[in-house]
Image (cartoon, rainbow, N blue to C red; front, side):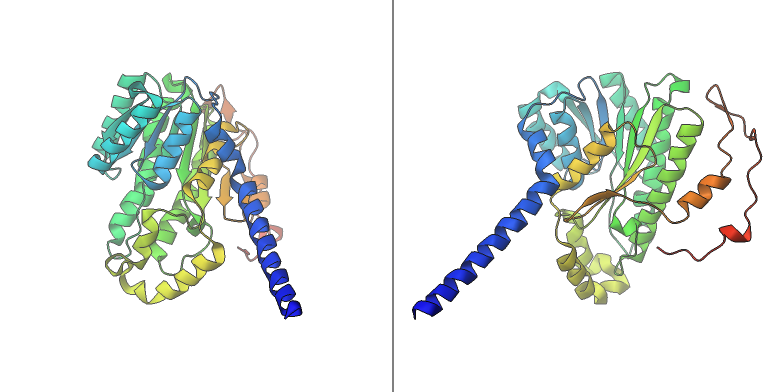
Length: 337
């Protein structure tokens, strides 16, 4: 009996050690944000941010971390009641003049432009824009494209109109929110996957435009894995999963393997993309086990043929000082994703 008790005790100790290791790993991935939230940090003092889809989930987390670092924030969301409740909550902690809430559907060009205009009227500047609003709805796939991809394009172009230096803006940074589904396929949501791939590609392309044309604006893209938000439950909803509801068991297994991120962990990555001024065109992947910048296939090859010598005093001339190299057979190969 003594030996059996000793074995049980050893097993308990093993489980305890594993729990400690797991806890240590969680602290490594989210420790920086925990410190940021517990200690006053005014590194963004005087800056103004605008976040779409800000009423809940990731958008709320992004708005909160900006506020904790001293920024003022315009909260945009289609859900007016939830957004007003969030505004009141932030008022109590950060002061009533730190935020404004604006009802906005990002699929409406008029509403989005009006929200930017009201933000400028209130805070006199915009330095940080986060195009975060998104849905999963494989049945209403055109709506998914309109919000997830067209909304990001619309938000980016509207932001540049006000932020780029050639228009009298202050410059700044735009962070577009994609997903791990923007880096590889999510089986149960092919349209969602397509929109997030589009966000990644568009963000990288417009980042190069900003650099070449000297707009003074950086554009980065955030690609989080499964995160504990309301959008995750949409994957299990038959009315939104469409013809792929039969694959939800596979999706559940993928979630189990990947693990569930908390909003605070993703917000840490968002803050990094905002504050690291060396990052433009960067895609930051955030998973439960790591946070890393993505290296894309053919990046090194494409960098040798892109004619990026055509800048003169911040104006795109449209012609290269040196003609681009011709692509040869040495450049042709199968792409490994």
